[in-house]
Image (cartoon, rainbow, N blue to C red; front, side, top):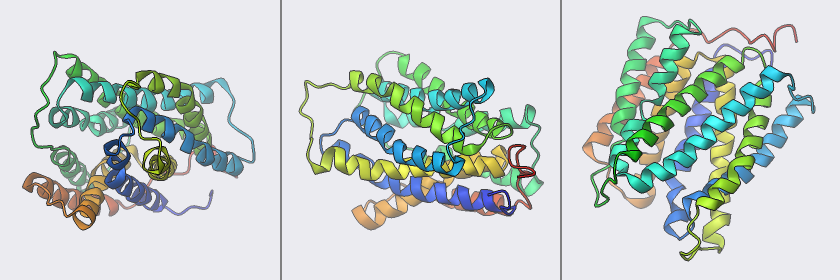
Length: 304
């Protein structure tokens, strides 16, 4: 992929948005059918195996194994996977309509780290798009207040930790791509996800009836493979694009696709706040897509 054009980041980012958007539209079905989200995480970890295997094929078996690559690769996986487990606990102790707005600040963390540490730059038009995308992400995270009541303040701490971990993960995905191959990042994430899976199983309440039929683990696998493929294309988006551009785009667009599919399939009419967020997200994506060029090829690809 060394001859990839300047707009490859956009192709990979849009592919991620598509896969994650479709994933978002169907992810709740297994859980509503009696298959816990914690076991859904375990299924997701298993679906990373074929994706990681494909990455190894692209690497021709030559995984980046130096100390720095192992540290960055495992850190990326740990931040993403541990953040997911923390999210389960945050949703157990706090209301979703407050948890998700907290988590929506993750791209802001990525943008700030990339701007001040990686010295990434963007055009004025792109900065407008970034700002609009952040507002859109916050609006798209809106959920009507339900009956669930908050228990203490642990959920606030956990929500902020998740936002910080996912924001840092995206930053590391970009910075690591400057010294190691993207395929190796996918493999290390697969390893970490599988290593953490026993914790997700331990968190599962087996005293409740679990649906082991097709609509449980098998349907979950069909849905979660979309998440896994989307992660791989996300890594490549960060490989060729600027984190300050890629991060807001891949966070703003998937909910738009999810809402549209939900409207078509389930006839779910989105809340006006969500509709506003959709309009802003599409506007932001258009502005970000007009960014004249992405990053230069990382060192691992030059002269190859």
